[in-house]
Image 1 (tube, rainbow, N blue to C red):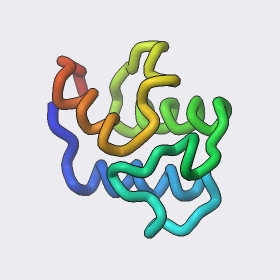
Image 2: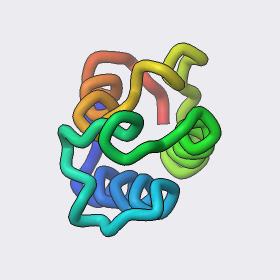
Image 3: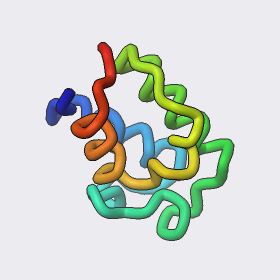
Image 4: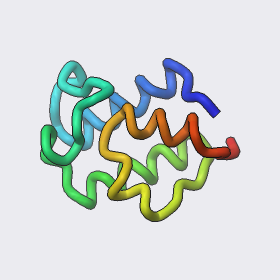
Length: 83
């Protein structure tokens, strides 16, 4: 399942909101933790948001492995996630 441009932009917007930064600071390769200072609570909130908005269930290990837009896109492209 490939994310649409609108879905990617929705995730980018939520990352910016949770990290309290301008959306222009969130590129596909921006690391949420090291570059934006997001902690585990913000990452958990982001994953819950993605699951709710895209109607999918992400594995628990996603909390530590999905720390950029690029990694989220890759997860959706390589896994058979149901919408």
